[in-house]
Image (cartoon, rainbow, N blue to C red; front, top):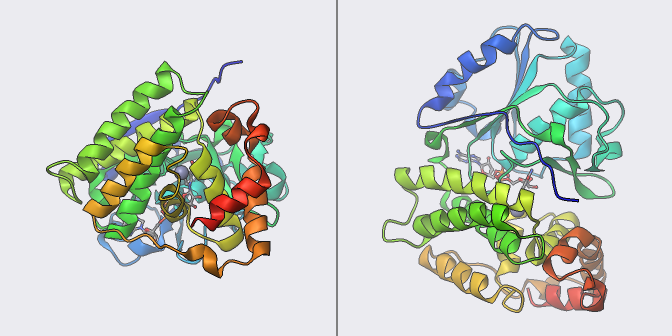
Length: 359
Ligand code: NAD
Ligand code: ZN
């Protein structure tokens, strides 16, 4: 069976397109209890974006900090219960922020119409009913969360997405002006998530002409942004990175991620490392699997004077390493793609422990 995915219904791209949001929401305002929920990264509290928010008196606006942790099932359940109790079912949800906020908006949209805890729905196609209308406005580029079919949540048992076709945004607003304030290190780590998505999507058995076309273009844009003559955090590169993120996300949607993401999930779940940073820490040590990609990744890091930590594993005890290896091992779809159907012949918990000990 070939993958059959739903894409974003509508996309607006361009500087200043954020100001079209009011017009975009207007025709939807009559739905359900006729109000919108805005989920905004707390970074924007008190910034000009707060004043430009097209929120009406009846709307609910939540500024959420994503500093302490990535989105959790408990956080979504609490937010959902509070919103429904306050005002009933909204016309829609708008997420304005990075991958964390976009995932909160996607998960909230689904959980507003599906009963019980979000832990019940972590996995593929477990959601029973479509969510409410939802809009994504990325403010940092790289994860591809704006286009993906998943809303990644950390729960008590697993770090796994609510993955189904209703997860995909109905509308995205891609305004390159919104990413100009991203701190340089996050700009690099999150941008590299796109690059790594492409390397992993390309190097595995799920790769095909369709996913390859997106990866090829996204990698070309990443090279211009991170290595080219005019590389760096500049307005023209913000446009390129925003498009690269979307295309990298599409590439992996039609293919799959691999070794780096599998190991990264272990690092995030057990030690709480942020997704994009964890990927960078790991990619630095994966020459055996992606020799050319790792070489280029290191050149990009050196070019932007990004220091990735060495010797981390010295402070990890055997139990921690075993737990991380267990999480990584239990992602068969990634190993199946990266290594092949008989991946269990090559990949073992012991090998994964050794890989973690390289960090
Ligand atoms: P993030 O949302 O975690 O934000 C990173 C930091 O950048 C935060 O401190 C945030 O406040 C700040 N920030 C965001 N926009 C800013 C701006 N314009 N100016 C200044 N600061 C800004 O970042 P991320 O790396 O995009 O997202 C990581 C999350 O995405 C993780 O939770 C991960 O699990 C998830 N993820 C989801 C998918 C998916 O397909 N759904 C894919 C990969 C990762
Ligand atoms: Zn990723």
